[in-house]
Length: 383
Image (cartoon, rainbow, N blue to C red; front, side):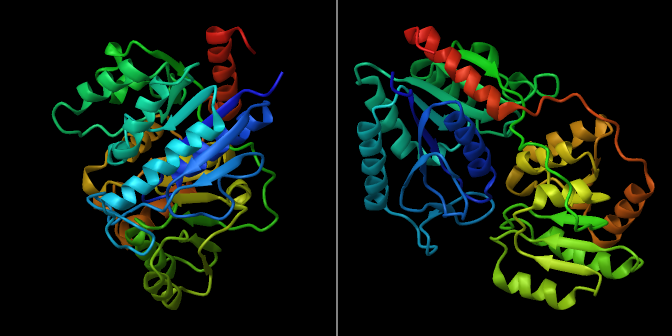
């Protein structure tokens, strides 16, 4: 019997969190015996979507700013209708070529409305297929809450019309879909929780930093970078610091930070061994993105979270505040961030005990494969 085929669509616009989580799930599906084709549409990132899967790269689309107000191509030029048509046609060609048993669409329709010019045609094409693939939306546990009037109702209508399963990558003991999506009770599709999609616990790195600061992809991290550099210069020099700016921090900002860095602060764009560095660190300082938080929870280190909140974003703030209530992190709101507030928070956390162990489910990648196996068996009797 041939391996069940999965077509997995993911579009990252600003950071790389969506791509990283989707790649981790896709890798787990491949390890479980699925034949996986990942369709990506954002700026290429080395190492993603990872080994063991086929990959189709659509022409790049990125967000022009933190408010996601405009979509651009790889050069920063606004995209036009011809560009959208080219992407749509490539996506539909991938669907026809793969002939999937399951189509997984990351975020949509709970997010990524900007991509409906290609996703609605994709869903219509799936509806016309015989046999029709199962359709799954793959979403994180905490969603953006401040949405326009009627948006949630539209989301429910699309889910109920097109989707068989809402696969929530979270532990319902920490956050359930209904906590941040108030119309969850109106969804008629199956809702399944996979646990948080974390990487396996790494072996701690032999290279040790007292304070490890990370800014995700870096596109929205200038405030934290600037505060961290100044704070490092103002605190006692007996601690060793590392600042990982992310690959998308503008080059001028990277160079300015490097020029101001004190001698005890290493500044790099990327560290492939970031989870292992966390395992050896005394303290992590980061934004509160899904993947970074998963890495911190695996490492068990002290943590300061500075949630990204530009453009009315709420997701990271909700996550950081929930972790603070559980005693697993200290939340420092972005609008309160300064070199002095960050320095005080760092001194406070370094003096505190390490957080207690937690019981949050971090096995979401492997359990995603189990959920999709169950869906396939329910539809076809095929495991």
